[in-house]
Length: 194
Image (tube, one colour):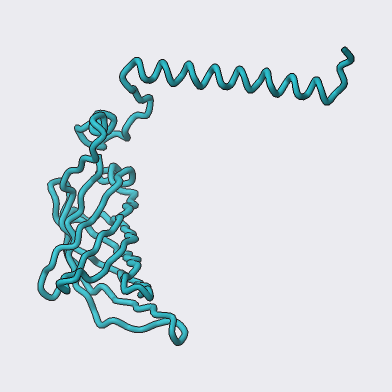
């Protein structure tokens, strides 16, 4: 039987495919036979709980990070006619949790996109100052909408940025903020996802 380039290529593809399949199957059998382990290490100061242990039971776990309370200014419609963009300045506020506390110093605001279905895409950006003078920049994307009873439902996903060594652990935090009704304010209880 004569082997040409096309037949050789086909044989090589089949051989490589068989090797890959065997490797994947072996890896799957090994991982199902032994408990999962992680080689990723949490950054220094990231907290006492090991995130690899938190998800072993398959359930999402969290811990309280901080309450964020924002003072809002007058909303302004922005963008071209019919764009449904609203900008809400944030004029101040505060945050407090077990490991951090301080005030919202700005610049800050929420660039809201109102959707035709009645929901809103939130785009919050705030500058925080801790009680010990450090700065933390926070951006939050989120969704808000009115429930049938008229109450507001909102969730945000804060991302933290800081160069302060004491608060550098925040740079690796995955968090969710849950809206809490507070008269005259916009407030979120923020949870760190473990």
